[in-house]
Length: 112
Image (cartoon, rainbow, N blue to C red; front, side, top):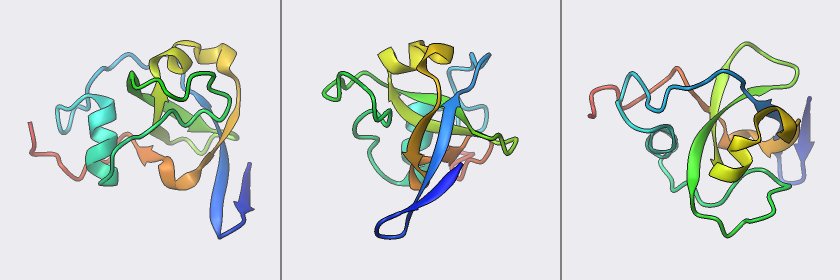
């Protein structure tokens, strides 16, 4: 589900992808949170789960998420380790589409 937010920002429904265990991107060799920062050209900041109970948590990971309904693409999204560990129980939540980084695309393939 997508919807336009005030200011032209697209919001999209996502959920944690189940069964993703790779800790690093196979193309750039970086951990997923570093992959996100490299490809998005910005610092990850805080957890993107709008229901996160600890927004000050800086133990961030690059979580694998999929859109709802799924478009068949796996994305990386900054979540705190606590939210990412909830997997299925986290359920569906809405994020800014500008925060989604495709997991299978890496502009820094030669950086190790």
